Amino acid sequence: MIEETNFETFLFISKNKYQIFVFDKNNLKNLYNEEIKINDGIELDNLSKFLNENIYKIEKTINSFIRNIILILEDDKVIDVSISIKKKDYEKNIDRKYLENTLVEVKDIFRENYQDQIIMHMIIINNDVNENKFLFNNPNINVDYSFLEVKFISISNSFTYMFDKLLENHQIKIGRYMSGNYIKSYIGDDATELSEMANKLNNGLNENEAQLVSKSIENKGFFEKFFQLFS
Image (cartoon, rainbow, N blue to C red; front, side, top):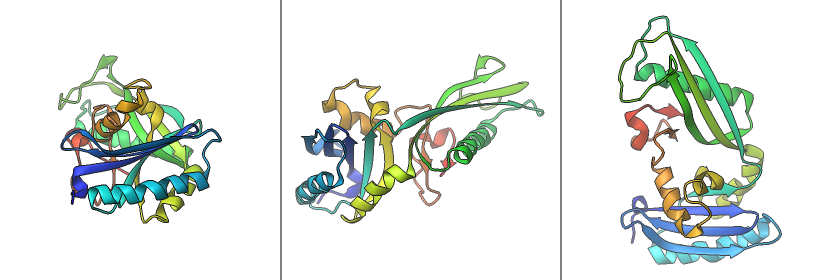
């Protein structure tokens, strides 16, 4: 039996293809990889059949049940929104806690204005202090103001609802949504590298991406050395 902590299961869905793969995090290779081309767009009956055929094979291969899956979506319903905020710092001091609070504030602005959206990725695009690049490894710096720009990649709850319900029928929970276009921006269109890059990005490859985690998760992962945001 392969321990669940040693692998990650991904389901890629686009209008042209379904792909499911299990990535071995220790040996950095696929334990399982199967895909099917489609021509009629996302169709739940066909997707359900694809899952039925492959989940059984996966669980037999790894001798373990699949409990969680990361869903990668490539669809025009995935949206990009950038939000910037400029704040006067009356104490003339910016530290890690200040940045964390500002990021939480930006996230709250997004949630207030896009209430039906699930955040897939939250990426720092620009973080300038007095027009000079501010690096996170500088613990403190005296400034007049701070400027932060964050890009949100998101998908609507109404669109993802059908995937949630479909996978629930297989006793599988979607642990996270990721953008296929965001992943492919690191690798181009080479599908053979999709699994490895999805794994790397999910585990903190992009240092400017905030990892949104549940408060109940004790292992904060790669990004905790900078800040932690709770979804």
